[in-house]
Amino acid sequence: MARSVTTRRKTVNTLAAWAIGLLIFFPILWTILTSFKTEAQAINDPPLFFFFDWTLENYAVVQERSNYMRYLWNSVIIAGGSTVLGLIIAVPAAWSMAFVPSKRTKDILMWMLSTKMLPAVGVLYPIYLVFIELGLLDTRVGLTIVLMLINLPIIVWMLYTYFKEIPGEILEAARMDGATLKEEILYILTPMAIPGIASTLLLNIILAWNEAFWTLNLTAAKAAPLTAFIASYSSPEGLFYAKLSAASTMAIAPILILGWFSQKQLVRGLTFGAVK
Amino acid sequence: MGQITLKQITKSFGDVQVIPPLDLQIEDGEFVVFVGPSGCGKSTLLRLIAGLEDTSSGEISIDGRDATEVPPAKRGLAMVFQSYALYPHMSVRKNIAFPLRMAGLDKAEQDKKVESAASVLNLTDYLERRPGQLSGGQRQRVAIGRAIVREPAAFLFDEPLSNLDAALRVNMRLEISELHQTLETTMIYVTHDQVEAMTMADKIVVLQAGIIEQVGSPLELYHTPRNRFVAGFIGSPKMNFMMGAFSSEYDATTIGVRPEHISVSPTDGKWKGKVGVSEHLGSDTFLYVDVEGIEDPVTVRSSGEVSFRHGDMIHLTPDPDKIHRFDNQGLRIA
Image 1 (spheres, rainbow over the protein chains, first blue to last red):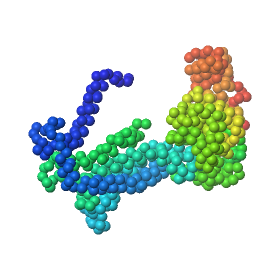
Image 2: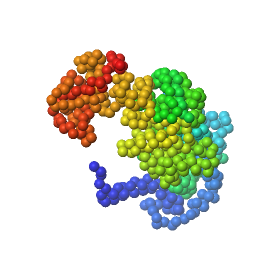
Image 3: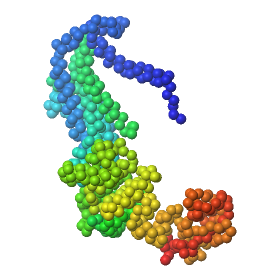
Image 4: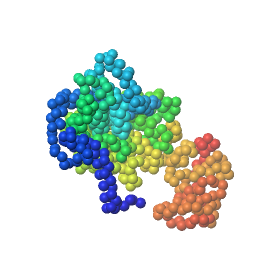
């Protein structure tokens, strides 16, 4: 029997969805609101919601004190670079696992996933030493490589599940139709896999953008991305909530905008395979 | 031209040999059907001919040339898949033109051939649509169109109708048969449906466990099946088999009688039995009769007017000229 969708049920569901949505969004909203308050208003008790003196002063101070553009540029390079590098390695890897599987394919996939089960701090010391040895500490190249490695298992897994959904018979048909391996990949596989590759790319940029453990531990000044920019406002100067909030807002704004414009693609990519 | 010869072909997956050494000759212009139960190796055999699987040993030659090591695209064969395998991101026009584009034909030439294939297959109005916007039958026609434009030496069909509903299947069956009459090109067709095999084939190859049980025209297989397996597989409803006292009378381990070769009478006959189920199709009536000493009910094909009911006692008499005799190996006794 199909469930009847009554108006009341619909209303209750809608309200519940909004409540959960607001609950999740609230910390971000609060950060943005706080960034427009004065330091005194930011720690006011009871908390002030909308009725305070809106000010851009915090942004001016933050902009004056630190070079936002340099951090932003580092973030773009590191997030973008690690994603592109990751895709270059992951696409052929996922391809071969999806279309020419061997007896060990499943084991390799599990092994790759298992690297995500180790807490990052467990390998901090060895990686730190390797970085010193290779002179990669506080370099964008070093961070790009580390973030690529951190996210590689996820990219391979996502692409693998995506490629798995492409029926092998279509590739065989292309082969019968006279396509060479290059033409098969260029004209048939890639166009069919583009939604999957695109959503993997977007997710990976977001993950790399927000990564804070390695970016904070392996950088000092030169290669520091926006995560370090936020961190620089947290402790050393005491509790300046409004300025910290302004810095946070500036750090998350670019990725928030990217996420907003690509949400359709992201949702489609992440739920792919679940609903056929 | 489309003459295909298989010489001592084998195929193994790991330690499992799915096709023991096998010989087969397919003549130019023939409509050959590979038929057998699922897992009998018929699709594997087709894929070996297509070049989508490598042979473990043996030789495949197409029009007298050794093609064993030739990649699929260079064999000059076209294949229609069970799942249609259309390119979902391309329009019907681009799907059909794809093999021509790969062959490097210029745009005008491509268009000309696509248009003519589309008009043969009634696809002219759908050329700009995507495969996702077509019905199952239309998709199958696009797949056939993609095969036709290449003007291949032979067409390979891998269970092309099994995803269609019953009514459409009959239509497409006729269309493919008609296409064969028009093109006069060799066609190799894989199916598990013996009705498709009987109605379409010039030559049927019956396979079981990778072994060819019999090769022959549909009527040869019907009238003189080489063994019990072929006898039971070809013909619908299935042949009745009887053993013990029933067969020793005819100097055989097993005898087989087709449902259409048994007459019924309410009063007298050779075997006596009780009617179980009777199916009235209008033109025919199928009776399933329980006869003492025979494990499965005996199927009888009778005229549409016959009206026996469940539980009626009736008498059955086989046509003595139409009794098939098999020895203890299951082989036909001449």
